[in-house]
Length: 156
Image (cartoon, rainbow, N blue to C red):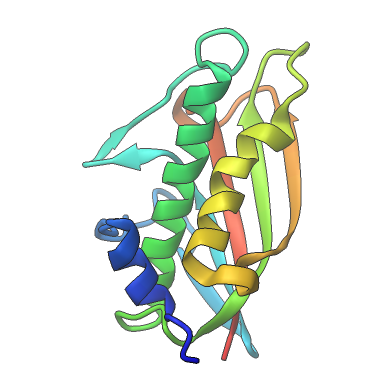
């Protein structure tokens, strides 16, 4: 039995990855170290515009925050594909996600929000997409976006 690679899964899911966005400050979007590749934090932007702006639990619903986390994950995959020269098929799996939620002090469903990113990794990489994770609430994020997610992947 052959397993579908991540590129075929993306096509099956109808997900077209955007062009990777250039860094906004003094950092690189991806850094390889041994068999690992680290992807810098990605925000929920599409078409050059920030999406899902504001605090979760006040301005942004949990449902929209989940969508924001998923969009962050789509942008992570775009950065990963670019760093790997145009294909995700050389990825062994997702090792870790770090999720940051711009939330009100009383908001407590950070893990539920970051599931938006986690679920996409499993959809794209299958069992190899299961990862360790942090889901953290914070007082603010760049440009007041609702969510930011970074990632570590293992290369085949």
